[in-house]
Length: 185
Image 1 (cartoon, one colour):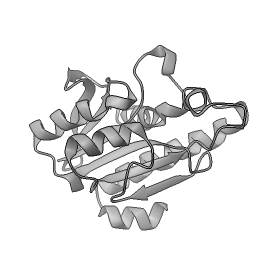
Image 2 (spheres, one colour):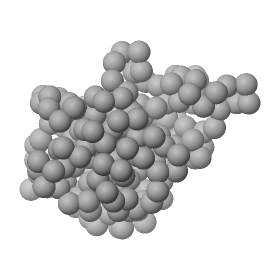
Image 3 (cartoon, rainbow, N blue to C red):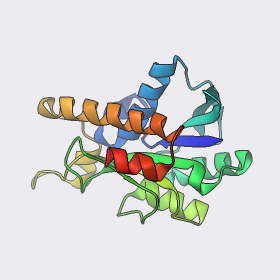
């Protein structure tokens, strides 16, 4: 069983903000398969289904970003998901808007959602897709930037990164994550 988690903040106020690109990838995967997040448990909304022969869980934590581990940890424990069967999708200030990077391990890089998950799981050895949202302009705080919406000129890049990230998630169902990294990085 594999679990794909998209990070973001719950609520209409945060829809389509930079911090919610992880949610947007999950939304795209749900749309592709005609599913919805039909379960509410583990401080999150999730669904479980099959893609081919692979059982898959899609999760959107409803804890707000800084407490993402409070949703991921109980779900992973309940379903006994191994770290190498877990994929976390989140925004990254250090990548240009629209760029994606796949990694099998790493630190939190200052991302509070990842800090929470690493702390809750007690390991940093799990798969991840980082989606670039770029650094803020000099006159904009990091908080305002990540909680802000993408500018018109960024929309195409963001949509492309969401599609590529969803493609990478689906590829992972049939290939090793290392193979997917080589293909999508």
